[in-house]
Image 1 (cartoon, rainbow, N blue to C red):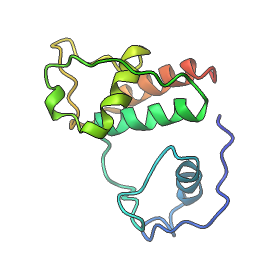
Image 2 (image 1 turned 90 degrees about the vertical axis):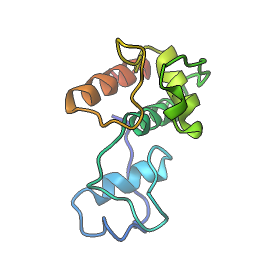
Image 3 (image 1 turned 180 degrees about the horizontal axis):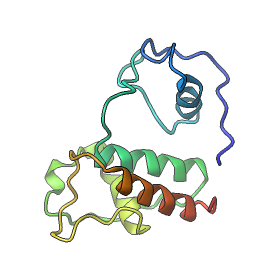
Length: 130
């Protein structure tokens, strides 16, 4: 949907032989995803809710969506990595990721596939791709 293509070889030693290496590299080149280190992507690692928020926010940034965030009031906001607060605030403002019914966000918890589908669909709608 974004028309991304890798233009360079990956530096990630753990994806060189993966069938996903070109997709990963294209997202890295676009600034949507990053590696765990300069040479490691960790392709089999689970995705936390806060990391998913960052990825979705970077998709929106790539599509030139207004990146103005909002103040977050989640009951567990102290557990959110400081460098991800603005991304989570943005997704909250855009009604992409709004937290849980109990007022928490659960930043370190993993997403289910259904949750990922929901936030991806909302992200693509905001970016006018769907």
